[in-house]
Length: 273
Image (cartoon, rainbow, N blue to C red):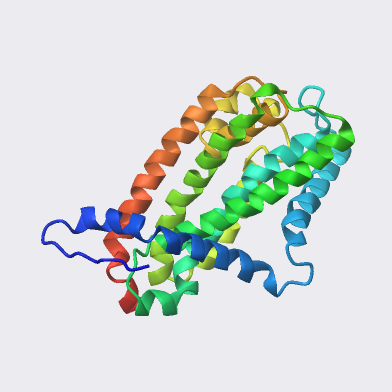
């Protein structure tokens, strides 16, 4: 495939977004490469995609249900309540973490060949989505074991998955830009995501949060997508319209800021990486 690169004075920004489309095949190649490299040299291979959320689900179920005796939502088993929240959280955390280190892990590619650098972090989100889809198969198996039938609006997980990915991409681009210049950020971000896991309703229901803290609690943008997934997959909660609206606002603002910072620093990547 031949690609024509056109440089026009005063039209670099428009040309950049056009180049993103022209290089769309490179996006799929980078995504597939990330998937293959991630599991090629692991002992259990692609089964790690299954084991990671499954083991986390078992740990959270034991701690919050058996030890803390927290209630489940509706008539759904506690296992399903946790796993349905673990899926969007894993998608968000994996996409955010991998996006932030995407450029420094591809330093040779970035410094030698021209292409829109945005494709590199974006491809890691694509790889995280593939992991998410594989984990959804396990959720279907758990539902069969518990003889639990999802509600009719289960297909809402498609736009919810897109929202989760965009929610991770925005701050991911921001941290990606900073990590190229300040390498310390790649060590800080795992602590941030670990803290976020416990302040998000993954191992517990949002309904147990006291009323006076609900507004502050919903300012966590991940709350909306987690409650949205539980609504779509289990039907145990009402449609979380307010929470999802907050998530959409945060996703839009974060994405705008992330793209702005990324584009402003992109021209220096090859020099400092």
